[in-house]
Image 1 (cartoon, rainbow, N blue to C red):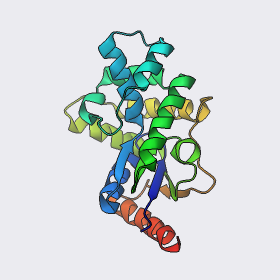
Image 2 (tube, one colour):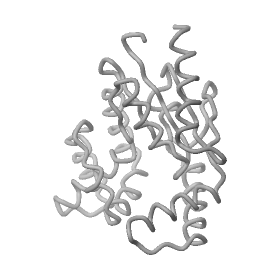
Image 3 (tube, one colour):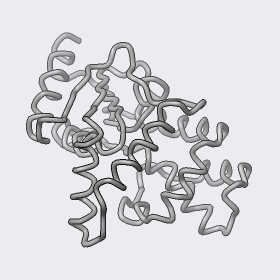
Image 4 (cartoon, rainbow, N blue to C red):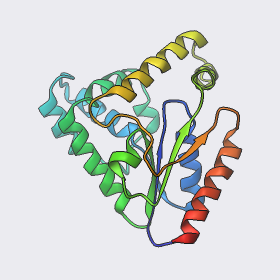
Length: 213
């Protein structure tokens, strides 16, 4: 492996990209960043400061204080933080500030695995490896429903499916950094395969690229 390896993983919600990213980071001994948590961290800081969620200047100030190397997934996964993050993430100045933090995180040796929706297109357009992880909406909804039920929470498949479709629509059509497949990304469809098969397929892609470099 070269001294610096950046793996960019994009895809819609519940496609399996986060689980895959964590496994790849562990395998290649790289740092991992779930970029969605970046915006949740900003939202959490705004809540802690008692700031209104339409305060873009306040959100920008909060964005400049977060440490991407110290994000508490469990805390940041709370529903109210997610709702606030969805409002913060559409602010152009905040997105630009957070992207700069994400780029700095990725560029520190020996590299990193980042997953999100604009990694290969905006955050790390020069990443050595770009993967786009997809799956059919129904399969993604099934996974998300099972995940929620496994936590002992109530979940309705149809409601989860409709929510994912609305989220896809927002991600694909937003003005700032929409979700799309990078021109040089390798597409990995996980509809009919489990995480082990997806991990093996991703490894083969990555190892081939690394061996050529």
